[in-house]
Length: 440
Image: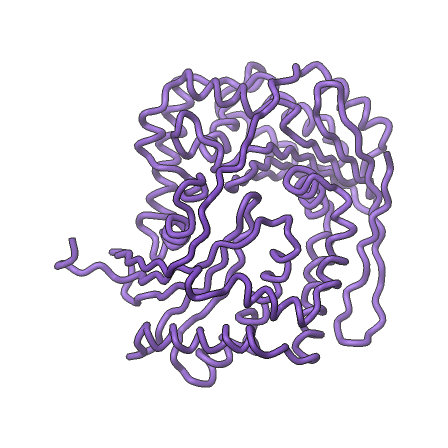
């Protein structure tokens, strides 16, 4: 099935004439359940091969955390046909680049090669899926790698545990309460059998999407994909059920002490709808309105005009099952955290009681038009967008339709969403403080 996706114009200024990009993609499914999406762009001799697995930090093993992130590392260890440590050297020696990322909801592997190395990229990803080596040596090696990452990016990094503290206050039952990287004691306690079971459960073709984007011939690429991925056996169906959270009806207060910081931080956090909901897009707009750029409401007020904050940011956390929304602020000088809370609440109240101006609204629309076009300005960006829309939204056509969702948002929607989700009794108030010697 060939679909034409119209990536419509981005207006740099209100009323400016735009331009349209058209992206074609071919989408089909192999007999083993692997979703395949192909995008042809012959303007440059470059090809991106990528696989997104529908497995992330929320997918636990026997209540143990961190398995998906661990596998992001482990699946570079080698396969029956690729020696230990050779995976990355093969890519670089053939003029390619690579990376992998894991979120709470998915894991994404991708490579970019000169287009004459397309077959190499497909072989590498099929090897990763078909028969990786999951043994004691690789597990022990990557366990140390993950521990070092945990120390570097979380435990020893200033404000490194902010997201973890937000998650634990918004979620009490759902695995979103736990950090994506997991707890080291869980990985230390995991057995080799559990790692192999986890791979068998989640890293099968019927739980994955392969995207090839760039300088390709569609029919030739289809044949190569069938050769490399067709023989991989289908796995068992992944069974998922939503773990429901009770609504937050009373303000939650938490204090966290970080030995790596000197300045305190104040955060407000709310649980919100998952990424598929239109209201999640409205919250994206509210975040931009409040804190993106020096002319945004909170930045202009707290940082520029009143000189009360060193930094302020509003962040919409887009998760699959639920969402999270957080506003964080760092005080400047002797400003009290309670003062920051009052000032932020004042701006939230304005959102809830006053419709934003047409000038602000047009600026928001321009920003999201720009963001949309930029996200699909390269074959690798298009590849990731296609995979994300297929795996997490179940609708690859959203690469075409999502901008229309943002365009359909009105000033009234912004006011409504602020009233519905940013209530004082539905939030966590978090004091993220330096740890002094007298604090246990």
